[in-house]
Picture: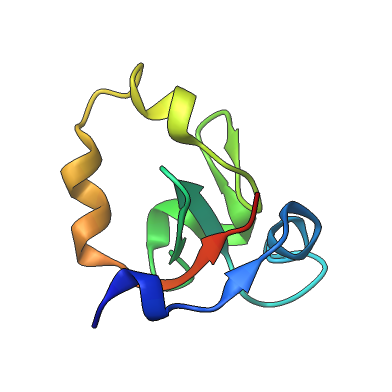
Length: 81
């Protein structure tokens, strides 16, 4: 799938996919939104000191893994603006 064909979501819509307000657990990286709901590492919407429903682009630079870890998750949208 062409990433440009993914639906757009606002930061407010992303924020609701935090595993608390809605069952989905989504995070954004470089304006692409990934569904990490199936990951045991994102249980209840948190992963170490990181919270879902946010753009984690800056945080990935400090992670002990590379951004390639996101390739195992489904891209579900693009972050608007």
